[in-house]
Figure 1 (cartoon, one colour):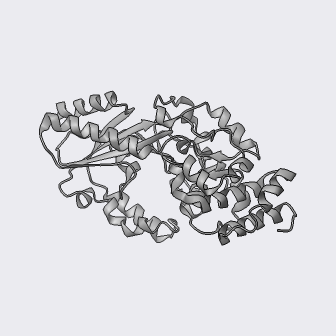
Figure 2 (tube, one colour):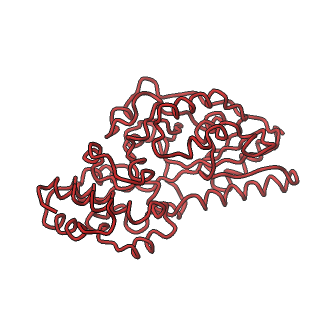
Length: 347
């Protein structure tokens, strides 16, 4: 099994994974932390977190027979961080989190994981396994830490010496593979990610109140965004990268060679007004194959309306907002009217 573990890592590298590690399935300590987090209500409207709580920390119950987890990392960084900072500083720009600017990573990651499973099966014969790419109740970060491919940063994301711009995928399996030593932490006294959070969602080291997180507010939250948080969102219309942008370890990040992660639809240079003008048909067509499509057109307009409310006042901004002040969606209307009021204009 020691030899097979080495082979699996070699095959993973050949398939385009930047790191592969193997973990056991003892997540009992993490289960306690998850229970406390849920007890505080910090998961907000993400009811699935509570609904599948214990399954996350018990791989053998999610996939019976599981004794090991193969954790895989795939880098997605495209473009220099400096250009991203310019987008955040331009109030007319529409900021989309870097992971969501290309094609949806789920299919690519699942496909690569399955190819790795096939390589293993060709060597061992049929074995119990199941691949996951953010598609089931799996404690990705915790498993990756135990597999030795990174440590949990104070922002709760996985970090390694090449930063955090990567996706994680897992293979639950019944093979008694040799495991890797858990990763050690290298954040030291740094708290840049905590201090930079626009909404102060990182309430302390390793403690995230998702209800205040811009990624949660612009993606997971289905209704109205709390008014007191709207001005803090700025021009971020889908997700947020601030805690990653300031992390010193991301200064060592490497660019991805995957074509699927390259920017589509000009999302690295689009303006709020430009995207707000998209029709629902145009949104569906352009966002086909994008992770953004899952929030739907209504939340897309809601997020953009908040961005426009935080933009510099101009005839173009006011005109765009007024054109949707009578939108059929109550949620869109509320955020459009809020944005107009921000600019001192009656709806």
